[in-house]
Length: 115
Image (tube, rainbow, N blue to C red; front, side, top):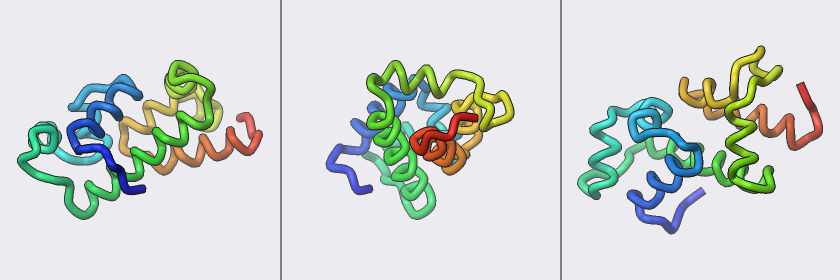
């Protein structure tokens, strides 16, 4: 999903919505915290895999925003123990870089499957 936001605004939007640090964002995207700093400063831009992961995370945040009535509702779901993850929280999977797994859990929830 291409974005019209500048990279610094996108990073701030993602970290703000998810309530994560820049370092946690870097971990999710499998880049160094310094790389995120350079993106925010406009010194470099995401390339190849990091760009794809950033776009996937942006799409996930968009989907979370659509799936829940409020951003707080989305954050509550992210930080609650989930049967889908064997009692772990979706945010734990996200912080391990498993954007795909969190997206799948959200798909299950949106489909009416409550685990």
